[in-house]
Length: 212
View 1 (cartoon, one colour):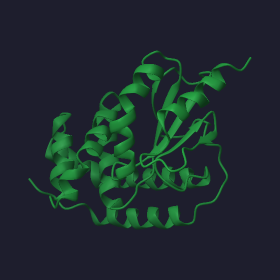
View 2 (cartoon, one colour):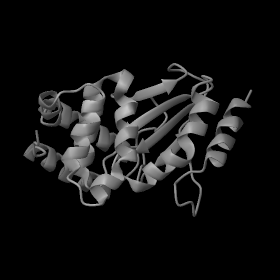
View 3 (cartoon, helix red, strand yellow):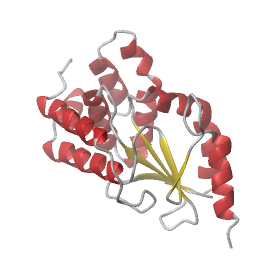
View 4 (cartoon, helix red, strand yellow):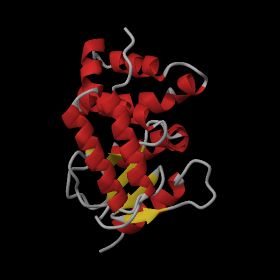
């Protein structure tokens, strides 16, 4: 079954793109936010790492490929940090919005399977395949039927929530993806082709853990 991405999703994507272009400052990136998806230590942990990323961002995919396994093993699986993932759609934003909707429909236990699966599958539609095929294949892989996927990507409440999360990201000072914050402080690796390096991220985490 092939279903076009909804007109509402496309409109939402346009809105999100406009919001991102008007990036400002405001909310604290490290504070808990509505819709957070997290792994590792519980809320209130000594160190919280927040990543803002998109399933359609090629640099996000490169970061995942190069760093996720090491980061997860060192910091998440050991419960030394609370890792929070926040969605900020990037072009093609309608695909990103739909991808995140599918991830949320999959449930908290499979959310990251969908997000990581879509990131690692970017090459499929970048090479000319229909993005819908990738979205449905990944959604099917976590047990969602085609009808359920269709309902997910056309759900008005979910799309409104996506708008609100994107606005909150911009208010936190996010102007690109991936963007990482450690206890509310942005961590950058200038010149890196795949975003913040694991070394710089680990150094920032270690500095926070070392504080009295």
